[in-house]
Length: 112
Image (cartoon, rainbow, N blue to C red):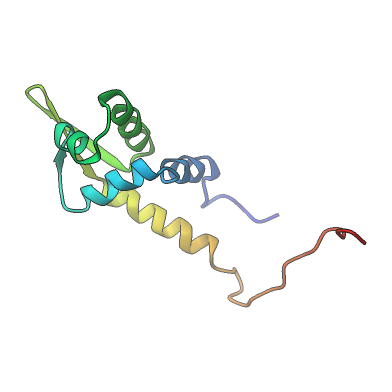
């Protein structure tokens, strides 16, 4: 079994879970332009406050976004370091250790 020392499976699962929703991907796409106020995100996505808060919480807990308070407003932005981690995880998963392609193993047969 391959070593997982440089690969935190639980962290990877948290990141990919956060990226597995259309609303959260839409939020990240909007935040590519820079920091957004929650009220502007809510208007742009036509999302209920509670629904958007849930999605922002998932993104924040995964470390994909950072927030800051200014008065009674909350502003969100992408955390570029965590996005770089996602990039590195995808590259790691798509790269063979030897650099050579190998055949997929077939376990059992269907309808044999």
